[in-house]
Amino acid sequence: MMRTHYTSEITSEDAGKEVVLAGWLHEVRDLGGILFLLLRDREGIAQITIVTKKSDPELVNKARKIPRESVIVVRGSVKAEPKAPNGYEILPTHIDVLSKAESPLPLDPTGKVGADLDTRLDVRFMDTRSPRTFSIFAVRHHVMLATREFLTEKGFIEITTPKIVAAATEGGTALFPLSYFDREAFLNQSPQLFKQMMMAGGFDRVFEIGPIFRAEEHDTTRHLNEATSIDIEQSFVTHHDVMGLLEELVAYVYEKVSERCERNLRTLNIELDIPKTPFVKITYDEAIEIARDVEPSLEWGEDLTTAAEKRIGEEIGEHYFIVDWPTSIKPYYSMPYGDKPEICKSFDLMHPKMELASGAQRIHEYGLLKKRIEEQGLNPDSFDFYLQAFRYGMPPHAGWGMGVERLLMTMLDLKNIRECILFPRDRRRVAP
Ligand code: AMO
Image (tube, rainbow, N blue to C red; front, side, top):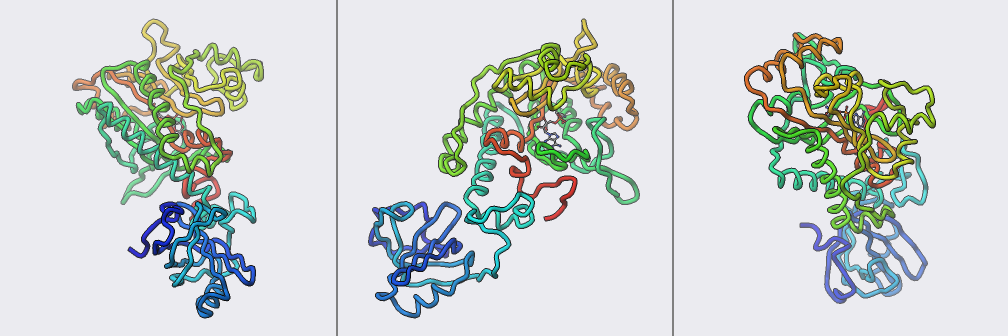
């Protein structure tokens, strides 16, 4: 190990101890008689104090010449200093430059010189050095960890399914084609068909956290062309059961993030309100009634527009479900009500600002599923591999998919979904 501590692991009580810190040169303040170097690592900042007259002139000279953002290692002793970050400073005996940064810098990680999101994304490796950006990804890690814990505890098995596929999953939304040896294949839009097949496979409860690819042309602050989805599927349950699981998961994730990411949340200036369960449920009919305040011409059977979602979100003001959707606007695998087949057992989970998840009780009967595929204008032959799983014993089942980036974006009140994924893929961006 090249270091003994992270900057956050030292306190004034370590006064007199010799330590080695490693990180980036965040800032230099040269007051002539005294030179302050701020060393930044993932966990925070430490002040390195050099009293120029009392120090080795070689060390002083060297320290003055280090360009900002160079990688340095500092060995020295700890001294209590109430005015310094974390209440201590380091009096250095050695400073080594491990990697010198060129100047000018493409971005200022101290945040003093503001930059727009595009510039930040162009040099993401530099942007993530800023405590604010790093905190978003530390929280993201805990969102995914808490999700895995919660689902594992509930008896779910994590699976990984192919991202190169032969057919569309979600029907309507566009696919990215790719050449697969001598034929065409696509990047998968959702693990939907595979997670359902594992219900016939006897797994009973599965989840996957993985990429989904959507070739939609949207250029909005809520859409990505490659997003990350938490998907679950469960046997012998109804859509109400999996809505219960979903709201419990959301509350659990908020709870764990607020317990485990205190410092990151402080950096982001966020106080988390843990959503109260059970979430409100409104029907699609009730939703369009509210939406007509802003979209008077909205007809039954149409999807909700962004303006409509916004109006309903204002009305309800907390997480809520929209249930009982028109069968015609939900995917073919959604189970229609037996006594009212024009509506289906589908639901969306909404944050007041946007949709977070959607799911349904699924059709588990082969004949009906085949008919629904045809009714949606798709060719059942391309779904043979999937339909086969419904012919030899398929339990009733339900599930949902929730976007990780949208969950994080709404949790941290971020303005653009691109803040929530390291290297966003959108209409204009395929690099870095
Ligand atoms: P759906 O298409 O609604 O449902 O997607 C589920 C959730 O995934 C996220 N999401 C996206 N996030 C960012 N950018 C996108 N382009 C994007 N597309 C989707 C959203 C959305 O709510 N198979 C079903 C799920 C199921 O029924 O189990 C599905 O994919 O948060």
